[in-house]
Amino acid sequence: MSKSGYGLDRAELREAMVEEFCELVRIDAESGEEAELANVVAAKLRDLGFDVTQDDAGSKFGGNAGNVIGRLSGAPGYEPVLLSAHLDRVTPGKGIVPSIDGDRIVSGGDTVLAADDLGGVVAILAGIRMARAVRKQLPPLEVVFTVSEEKGLKGARHLNYSQIQSKMGYIFDASSPVGAVVVQSPTHISVDATITGRAAHAAVNPEGGISAIRVAADAISKFPFGRVDDQTTANIGIISGGRATNIVCEQVSFKGEVRSLDAERALSLAKEISDEIKTIAARYGASAEVTTPVDYYGFTISRDARVVKRAQKALAMSGREAVFESTMGGSDGNIFNTKGIESIVLGMGARDVHSTKECLPISELVAAGELARDLILAALDG
Image (cartoon, rainbow, N blue to C red):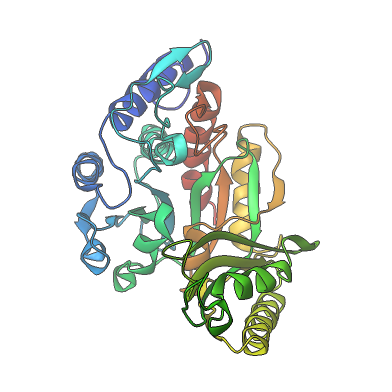
């Protein structure tokens, strides 16, 4: 049987990775509740010889755990490399019961599987073990397992970057097949609007009121829903307001977003939307409070960048070609790149993520582990 470089043949590697994946997904770890899982993976990193700390990120947003940061000093003269994945999963993510269905790991159908992103966690752990089986001394490594990624990249936002020395990073978190290399991600801006009109009795004195619902409806009708252009999308997803049918509604709030691969386009469109909402409200004699905070900035990594070239080399080591992708989704890579860590996001092969149909092909899990191994070994060649 062919050897994996793990000290195991591929069948044994497959079994070991599946066992570890199932072990970790059984630990409840929805966003903000990752403490138990964080302690388990921290112990695994210590067993691999890493110095491990947990920062205080969770305390900044009400979570019960910080990011797990592992450091391996490695061979002198080499730059450190960052490998990262996130610990949390979306709801429903408690009481996961994984099982094997052919080449796939699936949940019981009433929860997510949490392949997003424990597949990435397991791949990194396995990759380190395999690399160590091949080379006695590894390059300097930094492993960051973040918390609350699914709730606005909160762990990455509050990561203690003073503990990170790496200038290039690999994030195992894209749902595309192994081989996908995400080199572009959008700027994301929230649009939060509150329309204030004037309350009145809807039957006795409707003329005395200004309906915030009517104003909001007009404003929303002018909102550029969907694909605005080939790089930009916009949406409103939440509306709330009103107290009773016999009251002219005084206040309505709605929440939306703008995303664009062109940061300037995202900023200008968000401003246009804000100005339009305020103009429409004033036309009715109402007022509008609109905020457009930037949730995260996008990134575009050149295909000639070292972080990309090394990924291509690592993929070639197992006979794969890089497939370059852009995404309209965010990841910890959006935050890492703004912090001076040039980072790309790598395909993990999970399917139907964020749903109870989520599954993970075992062949993709093993391939992701081998990619982590080869990224580590490629770092020894510069």
